[in-house]
Length: 340
Image (cartoon, rainbow, N blue to C red):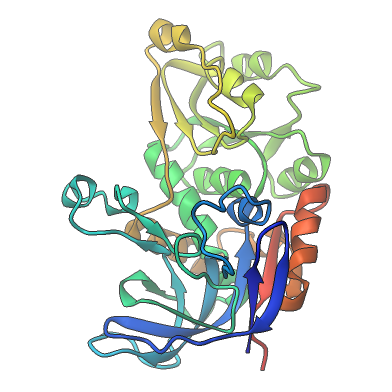
């Protein structure tokens, strides 16, 4: 069994996995697949060194099978196929007491604040587990976490049948948000500058435009009879996206900010006043979103396999990050963490 250790300065070392025996209330999982995402890339670039404890095993988008159980774990058995909701809340802060443990004021994100899934054997609290149905492959199971993000975003946006939705940003999360919104019966327009991602969105049956070559405001205005979008999801994390997001909604339209911005962006607050817009943040997910994601994936209603562009062995993790840096023809990179 191997593990990938981040050692700072864009350095990944592949070494022996050091399994942690599950304590009371914990389980040990033999990890099959783990996706790498923008957060992992930020860690690789050293932008989260203040949070990680090097050498750090990162990774949180995963699937696998239970290898061992600690005392007191009920409802699961060795061999069960699972994914992990990688949140470890404190349980006693005001947010937790209010029922919002996913935004716990002392939240530990497993894979950042604690060792992650890019290893053969991973030990986590049993309360993080979600069971995977048999008709989902382990590769598809590793997409449940980002799909749960999209389910949470769409739920926060209160998307309803017949509504007009704009998704700014056509990366993995943006495409998943668009696909989930479409299952709600919404008409969806994706705004993306990457030509590969634009083409993929269109192949998936989504309407997609490049805002650098199309007048996005005019297009949305024309397609909505002058009203504007019902919901705008800002997933680009770009200053231009923050500027555009207030120009697109109808009166009393909704904006959901999904992306993390490297710097606080300029936002046109006058538009909020003028059109009585509503702004919501959407951070990670709740248990209900994981279960919704699993149901959607198991229903085969979403073309999840098309989101995956690369599957690599653990030993090639650094090359996976370099591929993400180059952009172009990459969406989701999956890493095989253990192979029989």
